[in-house]
Image 1 (cartoon, rainbow, N blue to C red):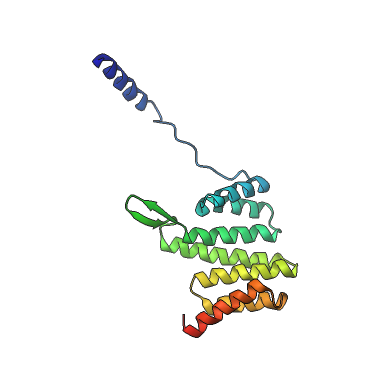
Image 2: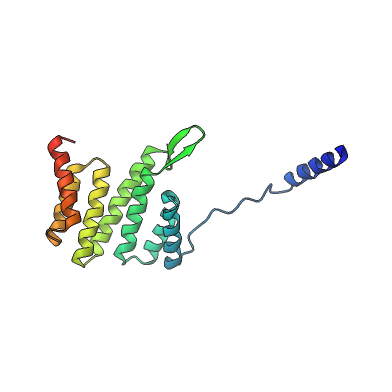
Length: 178
């Protein structure tokens, strides 16, 4: 019995010293096919992996640069990645560790949602994009800027219930001084 344990340990040691070490899975990369990359990004987001979804959304948006919805999805993924938390044995941490990286991603999210707004021509979809921009501003603490974005959406879709509710919530925050 002891001989078998020594033999097994020896085989394990030899295997671990093989050239190149143990094979690790290759980092997943976008395919360059917009539809495939978009599908993978959505799957990652559904798993709560916003930071990992960003390269796939970015690839899809770069592959179809005139599709406003792809820029909007990239903006949401970038913004969500700045908020994404994970748990390690030492506590809860941001998935994007460095604050300057999160700030850069927020700036890129705002640029992407603006690109989506610039591309979109349908009023209903455009008002939804203004709502997304408003939420990004609000969650960054820029409540007055968020309210201005809602005004733009309400100009396109007056009385739209979701926009009206968001405007009422922001008005209350502004009155309270938040």
